[in-house]
Image (tube, rainbow, N blue to C red; front, side, top):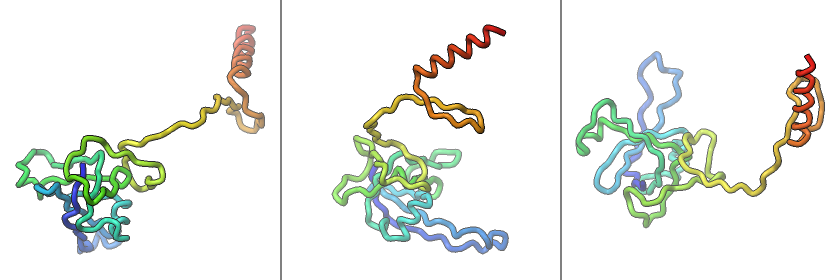
Length: 169
């Protein structure tokens, strides 16, 4: 789906003395499809995008794999703003074009390898092209034994020799 960033909320530091060493809370987003709005929890990757100015009010976000945290009960759409949150991750969120239609989209968004980050969370869909396939290689698993890897035919010969040696017992 594509949603519009309607507001960015920066919670203040905690006043609880037990949490004085805790990291500052992450900002959260208020997203809209043009009709309804919902609050969204974000990960460190998206929080960094907010601090650098990549995500700001008025931008459109292409979101895949969002999770809805609605508590235990469902609620009417107009009353659910304070009761539910959308949980989104950086690896499944990208900037949408300014002219993109808001709401549910007919095709999912595909992440590319260069756009992924280690703290970006869930990867919903990624397009991978295998350009070369190498044959299976086998190595000795024991410690202190240095030997070059071998291929499947060599492994079959070694496996047969091992089975013959077990039959002699």
